[in-house]
Length: 313
Image (cartoon, one colour):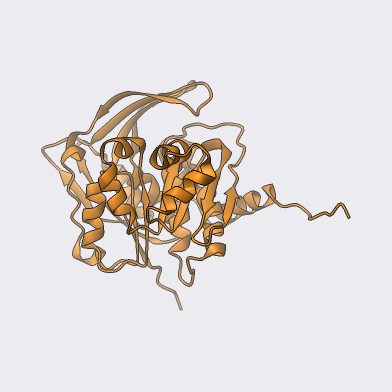
């Protein structure tokens, strides 16, 4: 008997990127927070995507999402507009990047309207969009079992009150270390996490790029997930969104309870999907994976921190 996967709704950007790295360039690279999240989470959960694109969005990308099992009935296509476009250049270390161009296009007036069948979904991830829109989406949901949210320094700066309002309804907040310090006003990352949890989120995940990610859970416990040392990083775009997809996807699996143990496992699956993402442009490496390949990568991560306990006495 096949167990039906719970439904996981993601609301965020769907974009066309122009990516420049020290060794390669791709002018038409499909991206966006919801795209990466959906492709990564699709191996673990039944994903429902909500976003907006223009007439220039490639048909193959929609087909790829469908082939991955993603429900794209919440993807609005505006025929008289163009898709959100971003152009960025990565520096030699592949950690730092410079934004060269940003064209919001149809994304500027994005007003998420969840299809009726999406509203009863058990899991919700509010990807990086305006906090006011995140609140609007949450209000459309009936009673999600678990709510995750991502944000960025822009919203912390210009929409701080709106962000703090929506954080009260969040179970898991994901953000990077710079954003954690900005939101909390604390430089020490442990103090920052404690201050952020006081704003409402029961669990805080702080992404640290090539240094992995830190979990501060509802019980006050900490967990560190490593990043996989890779010899060749092709394109870091979407790594954080892919991490969130793997993380939330694991928590949305049948029978998984959102407790300390499952959150730690989710951290590793998040790191697994992020490690695949950076090995190719766009979602190239997230497409067509099989369960055995994902599980083998998971075991690789487990081996990174496997050690024998020892005592000096």
